Figure (cartoon, rainbow, N blue to C red):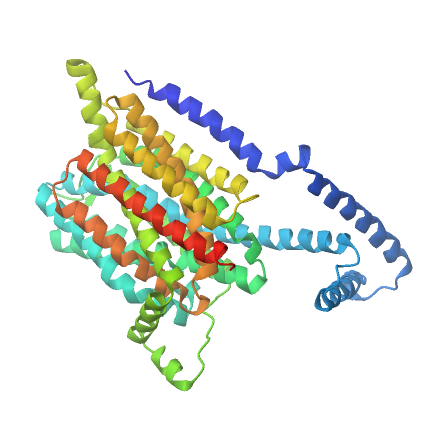
Length: 517
């Protein structure tokens, strides 16, 4: 019998270890020789600045500090232009410290809004099917609603990203909050047509959630001159997203059990309580998310790089933006590879989400027979999320020595191995361990791919191209929903897609690193 609590405890301890290793505390207490030299140089710089302040006249609010720093940086830049090494490493250390402070401030602003958006999504996920079932809809009708949601994401997402690049990404993040909030409201009505409208709105909101937030983050890093920190930003966001998923599961469970599921009045089609509780909490999170985005975030756009008036005209419409994004994608092997690889991995991830429950249930029933009393889904889900957290920390550690193109090859290769283990596993324990291995790959994948796309996809068409990437992804998801594949066949399909992704990533790595880029 599988001891899920023991596995959860072991994974949690492993996550604590790798999180500490990836943190600044590890570097503080166990510095590498390079870091030690930097710290020494930084200390000398601090002492030097203190002496300069005593001798220098006051100059406005900054007491002359900025002018000294600007002169030092200008001298360093001049030395670099001449081909000389900077005169003093302490200048670089001071610059790094300033960049770290700016990045921490930017990341704090981003995470407050993004994690609220992620919370709203996680709150809804486990209860959509349960709510439709509670309304009494058949499995076929529920399947139609789900297909409509993914179809909406595929159709509207194809051009809504281009509109965000042109009109402003912050505006479309606020629009995301409004649209997703309206989708939550429709859940209160026992009406198939109103629920269908809610699914269509939810599909649009999902497209925005998985494209415009990331585009805003990269745009903000570009504007602040902090692109060297983008990998850390994605890793932190993925880690936080996993924590939010665990918290959301607990909140949603309490909200779903807070009140009885019933119509507001006799014969009314408007319902309250029960499975609607998580959607109401999500609605509140979305309102706060939209307000904070409006208050804290600066607007950013896709940087224009048009060479003539014809290009500007082509970008003036959503269809023109979509067309430019499409031609940019197919004309660049690197961008096209990113799109195919991300669709294959994320498609496998969605299929895994659909299939892990029936797969583990079937294996547990085979092992226990009549003694089977169900699976501890809360513990299993929490274990998966802790594995994702560990994966994001492993990414941070690996990035100290590897480039994301190199790390991604390993991620996809390990994911292929994990699916092979699931397919050929004869016990629930080994299958569950393999699933946890895949979830660690998920934790490494998102910051790896986010960093690669940040370097490869052009800024002026970023959100539009990101949504183009989701078209083949939605085809994969729709295929899995509309076909009656067994869990084993589904995992074989996932493993095959991971092998293809590994081969494509190896070619991408060769072009960008082996090719001298």
